[in-house]
Amino acid sequence: MNRLPVVLITFLLGSTHLTQAKNASTRFHFEYQNGVPYVQVISPQGRFRPMRFILDTGASPTIFNHLTASRLDVEKFGRSGNCGDASAIYVRQVHATCGGISLKRVALSSDMIDISLGCGRWVDGLLGTDYFRDKIVTIDFKNHILDIQEPESPGMLATLFNEIPFSDRHDSVFVNIQSPGSKRPLLFLLDTGSTRTFIDTKLAKQLGIDLQTTGRKVHTVGGNMIAYESKNFVGTCKGYAMPSKIYANSMSKLSWEYSRRIDGILGTDFLHAYTVHIDFRTRQVNFD
Image (cartoon, rainbow, N blue to C red; front, top):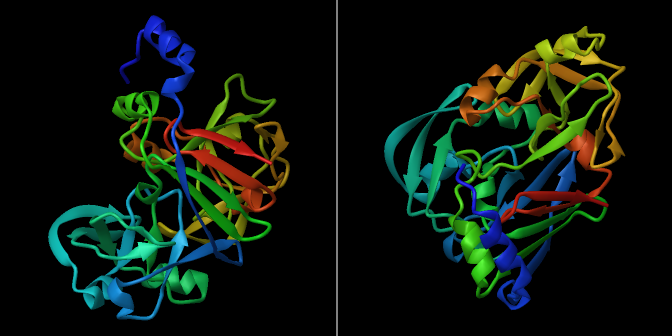
């Protein structure tokens, strides 16, 4: 990641008039059931029923269910690889909105039968972090309210930050976890699409965390997997205690996808107790 000279950053931060920008705010309710937040996506001119999408900060692109994409008659072009365990293809000319905000014209389409079965209800897609790009987002889990602020006319500083390459090739957001057994902060993916918090299995063993096989499959966006259960994890995120009961699974595939070491996933079993503030322009995260 290229870094700006310190002198330049200091100059810009000292010029307060550059940071001022009017914000357009959009607020709407989301549904929260069994640890999964759902939002409604509206088709063009309301031709079809409102679509049910998972609010998924762990998914970088927005992803449509194959059947839903076919019904919307979006254009498919090229195969992109995998979405979890399922193959995915690019789609474009996506004309749909969520909370009155247009989705990106380019998205992915994948089979979501397993995800729907895991959620116990039909899922039309995943609303990924590309939807929130450059926005300030507040997720109020207690009152089930999503608030999105988007600058109407970004100031010079905001524009400058937009030109800085992200530290990864995705729009995802990460948080540091402090654990007394680790000499370094642990890097966790903030994932509202995961109902559980996970830690890398190899790391868990290094930290001396007791692991027990659950004996059952844990449903994730990537499919079903056998996970290890831990009941004695000790850690904090932004000063808030994390649940002692978390799950362990290999993060090697996730680390490869993000081209960086990922130590775990922060799920809604932790997030649901807070109002989560995410500035997607600066990647800053706060809880209250």
